[in-house]
Amino acid sequence: MTETDFRHTGSEAPAFPQDRTCPYQPPKAYTQWRGESPLTRVTLFDGRPAWLITGHAEGRALLADPRLSSDWGHPVFPVVVQRTEDRGGLAFPLIGVDDPLHARQRRMLIPSFGVKRMNAIRPSLQSLVDRLLDDMLAKGPVADLVSAFALPVPSMAICELLGVPYGDHDFFEECSRDFVGAATSGEADAAFAKLYQYLHGLVAKKQAEPGDGLLDELIARQLEEGGLDHNEVVMIALVLLVAGHETTVNAIALGALTLMQHPEQIPVLLDDPAAVPGVVEELLRFTSVSDYMVRMAKEDIEVGGTTVKAGDAVLVSITLMNRDAQAYDDPDVFDARRNARHHVGFGHGIHQCLGQNLARAELEIALGTLFTRIPGLRLAVPLDEVPLKAGHDAQGPIELPVTW
Image 1 (cartoon, one colour):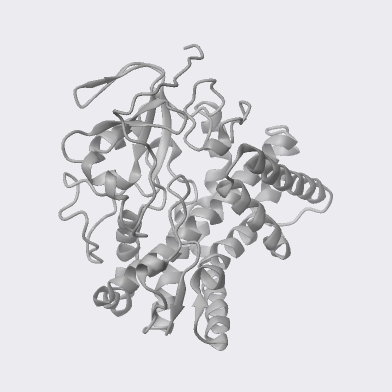
Image 2 (cartoon, one colour):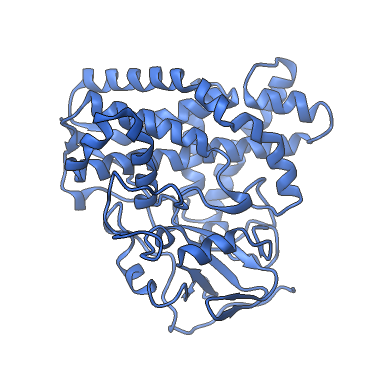
């Protein structure tokens, strides 16, 4: 494949992505893109056409298909967000590389994110959630559930897991927010540079004064033994630090909001502790914090009777896969008793979210405790006044004013 000019001026394919108007519902235009075919044509911000995969079965098959590439460094890999247009071939570990490099990086980290280790940190997560709710209740209503609760839970958790000083959380949360929410590539580059330099210094400090976090383990097992170089350790730490709290913040906030808007289903969460994981899975399906995944076809692929050509941009719609009527009865209905375990909220295939066990633990403890401690929790503003993140970002509210 060679670099190609994909710009065009045709208007036959609608723009993608689009913004939500309801925090937990797909954008209105998405409704016309599902049902008739498992894929449709859309247009990216730079005029490049792309295939949007909307079918649940087809999307799962493609996410597991090695003929689709995740290599951000490829010269014609699709760019969905303008701020990343000038990435200069930079490929982020884990999420922006293909096998065998991806497999090598993932193998190094899998033991640190296993179910056993995540279960071991549940008591500290519970203590953290209790402390945050104590503070929120002591201050009294009205509170912003994002800044008071949804943000600090995963932020503190990923800091503890990685061995990053939580005293620096304001700095890296600001850098992460500026990086993923930047309007231009210049703003994104500036935020990235600050975060990279911070982690560069932290890795060097940990080499001299080892601790007991995941980052320290990487340094001891891989950097010192030559499995990774300094830059790779810093980049892996950056990806884990940003991804480890950015999406979970939104998942907690959207999960709480969905339950507040469906109060008749809150007893399912409260009456039986064994039901909590199932409620969380349905919330992950229903809210679809990660709206889409970006890929590029390396070879021609047949999808639903249509040929996706080598070099084509492919966007796998997590939102629409999770709302596919072929996979779920009444997919637009939030049903806390639904068995939604085969949702794709964490992706699918080799790039399925490495931290999903941590995210599940955070969501189960955060939401279960929140509504146990504050059963009368409700929105303090009308639903249509909740400010939302743009369609190209992880989906969720910017602020979530609540009262009780």
